[in-house]
Amino acid sequence: MSFTPASLFRRPLAGWIASVVALLLSLLWHPAWLAPLLVLALTAAWFFAMRAEPPAAPVAAAPASSEPVREALEDVRSALVDELGHATRELHQGLDLLRDAVSELGGGFDGLSNKTALQQSLLKQIIDVQDGGVSVQDFAARTGDLLEHFVGMIVQMSRESLRIVYRIDGMAKEMDAVFGLLRNVNTIAEETNLLALNAAIEAARAGESGRGFAVVAGEIRNLASNSNQLNERIGGHVERARTAMEQLRGLIGAMASQDLNVALSAKGGIDAMTAHVTESDARSSKVADQVVEISRGLGSDVSTTVRSLQFEDILRQLITQTRTRLTELQDVTTECTRDIEELACTALEADALAERSQRVRSRLAIQREKARLRSRGPALQNSMDAGEIELF
Amino acid sequence: MIVHHDPELDCLTLQLGERFDFSIHRDFHDACLGAGKPARSYVIDLGEVAGMDSSALGMLLLLREHAGADRADIRIVNASGELRSTLRVAGFDKLFVLH
Image (tube, rainbow over all chains, first blue to last red; front, side):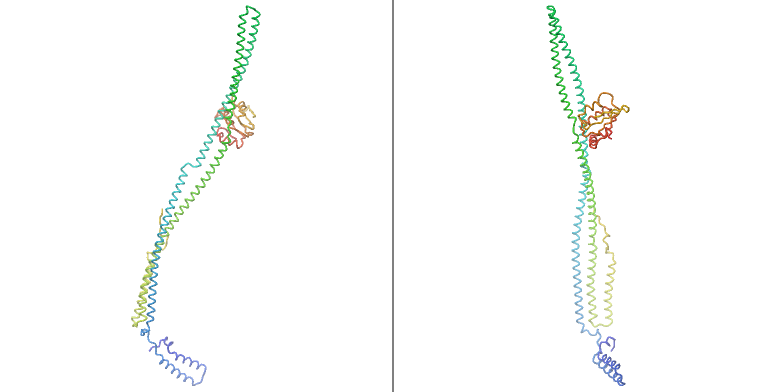
């Protein structure tokens, strides 16, 4: 029989109680006979206590009480294994979902990137067309040139008209000179008439011998009168020509006097239009630049996003690894609970006991070592930035 | 229109009235386009001119021809902003000296 401190504390309850009572009595009461009496009483109490409660049997030797432990361990094992199995399946499911989602996301972003590229090329076409074709600015400049040409033509026409007017003025002066000369001719005709009259008088005075001379004088008078009529007709024609020239002068003068204000205001309008177009061209070119910049930024964002989708690879590796761990954990749980069950419930020799517990510990140690090696392994990628995807 | 001739410099100054148009073409002709030797230089003062039409420009061109075309020394002075822009639209800033 062996007295371990635990059995000493647990089993001989009557002996302990008797000792405490004896101690209290010896402290409170001090007669001389008490000590031998107490010794006797304590001896008796301890003796009965030891007899009444036989010492507890060693654990290994009591397999009859091990059934609840076995059941409990069985429960623990099946619960753990089930849970681990569930976890593994859920992880698998999650992995599938992740793969689908990532492939859809990837497709979406690829489409986005294609559309962005298309947008960019269309924008480039628009800008090229704007740069290469006839701009509104060119149009305005040409219209301005045309207007200047038009004004120049008007001025040339005015100059030529004035030249004609000055010519007409010169001709009018000539006409005036003709008028002056015609007056002289008139005077001559009148004098001739007078002369003929005098000759007729002289002829009458001469009588019969002057008859022929009288005829000549009459003819001369007729000539003078005819000459006068002719003069008058010439004068009338010249006068009409003068009037016509005066009218012509007025017409040409009207042609020479063109209002330039219309051309001026048109020129002002074209200048304003040119300024407006220049400004709006500058603004739209700035906006186009911004749009190109945004589009480029969009492309780069999309490429970054697509690169980020590589997280799927990393996550898959992680999840696969976790699944492996879980599966291993299932095995370990099964083996270890079985060993512990045997340790707890089967009557075993001390050597076998030590061997089993050593086996459990070494199994766990192997598992720990595996985990350590795995976490150090090269398969895992730790950062998203490691990869680079070129989209364009 | 006031015409002033400086015999020392042989410079003919024409100070035009309110209107510089067809109505004064005869005076203009008599003042500087008539027969005879052209002056060495001309000054056209537009300070009082309020309205001007294309015949005024025609007269100036005839004066330029009369004064020797590219050798002519004609200065146009005191033109208002509107007149100045009219002259510029017609390209007169290249043919005359605008002050």
